[in-house]
Image 1 (cartoon, one colour):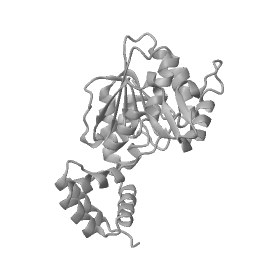
Image 2 (image 1 turned 90 degrees about the vertical axis):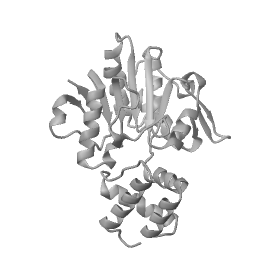
Image 3 (image 1 turned 45 degrees about the horizontal axis):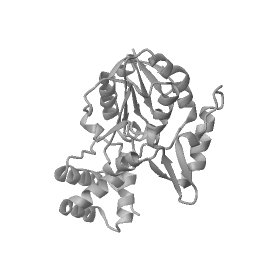
Length: 274
């Protein structure tokens, strides 16, 4: 496939913005171009053909946007991060009357349920309010269902076990998930299912979708798809939305640069608001 020119990508971005509320103008050009190229292959078309499709069909446009936005997550992803949250972050909240947590870019919800498990283990579950948002309504439906394919279970179990390998208390993943090899299904147990408020939300709009302040905000492996200026504006949104002493958790390939970094105390990929 021939390499797409920046002006071709811009024409597509303009067409999407014209016919919807989506603005991809400040996404990382490299990652966005790769996603558009995949669309061209999947639909066996070129940029003019793609623009024609999104201009004529709102259903196609929504489908294209969902294919462009990235949705990768897993239970207890990066166990070292969850060890820090388990041992250092959550104990600091034990005297809080209420704990608000926002998962921004929650995708299919595995991270949300990981956090709920830790809240249960720390006795913080009942006084926590958990919120989750994503630009893609389809992945939020999966998150709400709490149902995942069995094929990921080996990786999930490995992550779970690594998270607790130094813990004095022994935990069993089967306490939280019903695992069925024959049905190719991993299902979150009912006691974890009704805790989360989900909402479709586009982070590029730079709004707080739940209009509360948070003790923790998760936004892992989302910022990497934005350009530098948009990253900083989203970080500013998070900083404004956190209580002092609140934790912002981002992806291991992401960072906070510039003046906004002075607002946080850095602990790896966990940033505590000063």
